[in-house]
Amino acid sequence: MKHVLAAPASLTAALLTAGPLAAPPAAAAARAGADLVITVTPVHGGGAYRYFLSCDPDDGGHPRPGHACYALRAVNGVVEDLDVDPGACTKQYSPVDVDIVGRWRGREIGYHREFPNKCVMDRTLGPVV
Picture 1: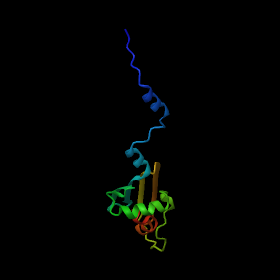
Picture 2 (picture 1 turned 180 degrees about the horizontal axis):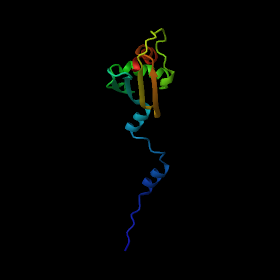
Picture 3 (picture 1 turned 90 degrees about the vertical axis):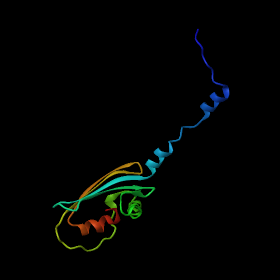
Picture 4 (picture 1 turned 30 degrees about the vertical axis):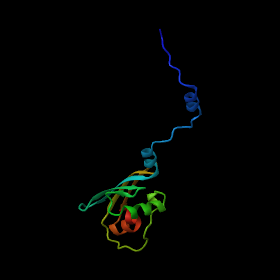
């Protein structure tokens, strides 16, 4: 003999009228903020470093997460649009590679650029690097 359990009518009605389930708080927070890995590598060796940066809340191993996130918020996470402190630099050629990868408010970030020297990198990316 097969037994079938019936749900009370009030439970059935509640399930049928309920809207879509909300995303768990952790998933919503991940989409709202940013998680980035920033790697700076001098082409001719020495002095390479890597930071983890998260925004909203501003945290991670970055030395100035609040300043870095503020700069990125100003360009909605579009690293290519950063031009923090335009100005003159020497013409010294000492190239520096910068990679920034991760997610900004649910969007993939994949930035790579070789700067002619650290001054140009600092003036362009400011507190992000």
